Image 1 (cartoon, rainbow, N blue to C red):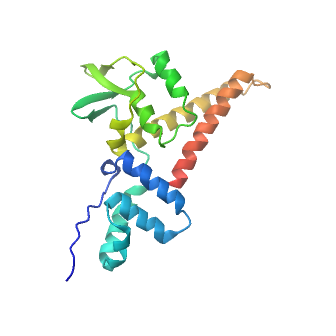
Image 2 (tube, rainbow, N blue to C red):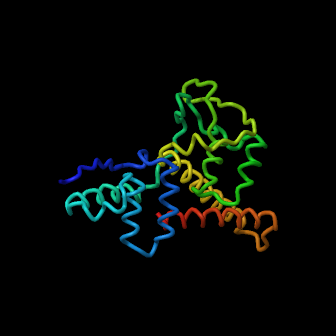
Image 3 (cartoon, helix red, strand yellow):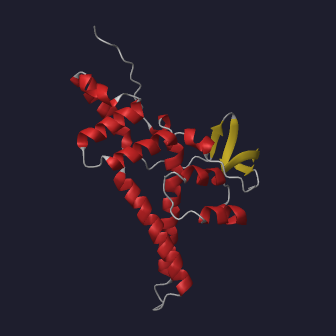
Length: 214
């Protein structure tokens, strides 16, 4: 007697939570040289499908699921979402990074890398806070209190997380480009500026490595 199994296949990153993504990434790193194991990881984490059942799928079903997953998997260059909903509460992205509170700046700077890892949800909880006022395109969010709680952000879709990540990637690339242009006429780079460039270079390298891993 055949056993029927319902398979829910995501077709976009919004259907994959950060919690699922981190678990998937951990397994992909462990099995990066084993193609069959990689496919099993994708099925298991993205479709909640037991890895030991994959061999029992008919060929057409297997091919269709694999196609649906790979169609969106590499599309991670997503737009920043200024507003998100968490448990019925509207959260807004930091509206003016140049005017970010010192406490928020210090806490974000405390993270050595800017990439989607186990600490990413904490960074998101600093950048996104409840909206207190909206007027047209303008809005205000709660003042930063120093409270860091990444748990609610673990359940958000990866479209939100990738949108934030690549917003910063673009920002860092532009910053590095502008700084380098301003130093072209100078033969000697001040130590303070050199430190900024090195740090930005490391962050950009981390982002590039992340994209290659995906």
